[in-house]
Image (tube, rainbow, N blue to C red; front, side, top):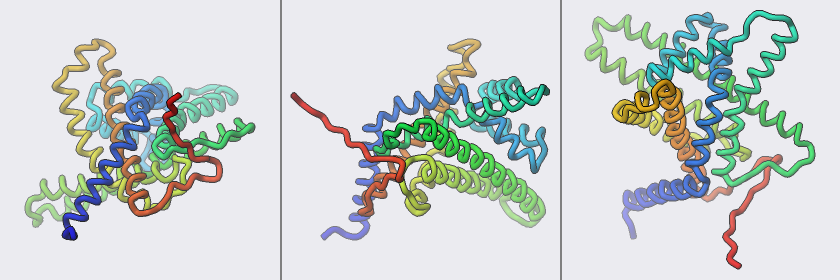
Length: 304
């Protein structure tokens, strides 16, 4: 009989292995490339919505400054400047009522496009598809509404992250005089806060977007793993992009290519986290339960 430690090790190794199989079978690389492409058209509207949410509490300029700072730490200065320029050009200018309403609707459609594609990618992980329906307009509107919910959730999570970060800075500044290793303590707490906030964001995506019935318990471990992998991967991706001289290779389009590569690699991490969530669910003896608007699909290889 295997010792408990060895048995648990084999259990978790099997989950990671099964997650890798699910990840590959769902065409993760093609899905990640598709997400990177759609991000080009959605990044500016998404940032505008997020800045608007945070700006209600901190002001528009302060919110935009914080977002740009976060982007620089994540994707690099050049790519962040590209996003900032796109946001500036996409911002709604003064105009008539019809032009303003049309601009808002176009911005919301653009902001939800990438999350609609992300929903398709997650459905591929869970092997579910929306039910064939004649009412395709209602299906489209439902998907857009779900995607808009995620966009607003991203803004809310970033607002919470910013508020907690400010509170953490104030707290540690007040105890700086008698707290040893102040810099180490601040860096450690900020890292832990970053992982927890990312886990909350990934958990929301894993629970809301796919057409599968999941509880917070079902997505908790997978979202935490994704947050840790994302935090580690963010540094590794930044190192890789800095050493491969990608920006200089593509000249004027270098910053755009950097953004595409970063989104592509990050999407692979996101999809593996979703695959791990599914593998962990199945390892616990549970089954995949589609929502009432979706059905399961099964892939078969037929030899004739």
